[in-house]
Image 1 (cartoon, protein in one colour):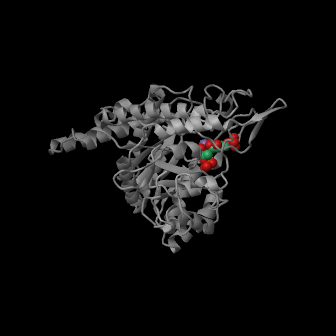
Image 2 (tube, rainbow, N blue to C red):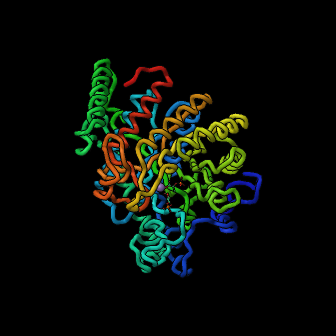
Image 3 (cartoon, rainbow, N blue to C red):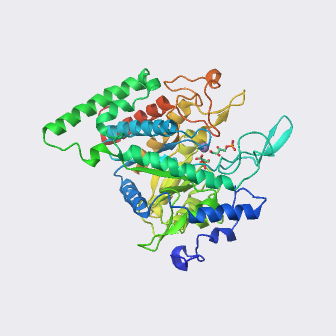
Length: 464
Ligand SMILES: O=C[C@H](O)[C@H](O)COP(=O)(O)O
Ligand SMILES: C=C(OP(=O)(O)O)C(=O)O
Ligand SMILES: [Mn+2]
């Protein structure tokens, strides 16, 4: 392996290399019973093409730096867990389409650029609360995402299979190929904004709201054309779309970490942005050790279990040079806890003069299990957390930098409430997720309108 880019002073601790995480305890990582099989899979991945390129990563970083200064909002969204069985061009297209709709609503509403990032093309590995799942008295290892093992409740499926990493890589490569085509090949042309409305959203209240807003945008475009603006420029016909996932499965991430030939810096080329989850963000753990050496923009999920002091230590480790846009703090704790704990976190960041992007994940702190055993989330609770996030930033004079949600373009029945009116009884109709419940297309759009309205309120604009 090449010598590490960063000198030992990089974060005041020992030398970093793409494999230095192996000297530290890694939580939530699968244990593979066949080391040869693991080595074989990793060797294959060591040689595959990077999925993303350093130049693209830098362009995302620049955009996030502007958000850190209060000039923009981040929209991160996608499945809780991508799966092999759900893989289809239409699935990717529909997620992309709803993200485009949400971004349009947020951009128009806030008059700010929206940085579009999918939880996609690599969002496979899952941390679990319990290492085992018990069904009818039988205990098997928990499902940890298709990149690790299979969802089916059999001991064969639940075996950790390293070859799945290779399969996940190739699926991610296809996904990225499709996303690149959709982003730049005409699909995302703003003149097509009416075509982004999904059939099942069309007839809903949110669908009508979207159509109304789209007509306003249309009118503005016609006005711009009339005064001589060239609307065939890439700013109008394509979008910059970035990928991200939880940096959990370090064998996979290490294999895709490459040294940029121009700058000599290390980039994890599995995604433009990576985040460390709530369960693996411990200071002495392998996930912070691994990510501290990367040049990609990073995120870290935090619940109320993270004290302001710990947060500062995490920031020092993940962004020791306090580079704007490098680190996003993704807050997920439920409305009540957020009102109590986020002010202290923001105060500490302000006091220590740290630059971060604050992002709200209003879904992970609001998961509950119904009596019939479905994991769900109530739209009201999600709305409450999002509103609490905005209220606290208003109080603290800080910038609410964006949102991170689990959503899909499909008409699933996984989260209850919102205009889509899914109830506990109807959850079973189209409950397709392999892990956490996702907002469906109309619930996701509804969320975008809430964000747009809150951003307007901040800037003194009238409601949409
Ligand atoms: O996506 C997040 C986690 O993997 C998930 O919430 C954990 O879920 P569990 O509590 O069912 O393990
Ligand atoms: C596991 C996840 O989140 P968290 O780390 O916030 O629980 C997730 O985003 O799916
Ligand atoms: Mn999740």
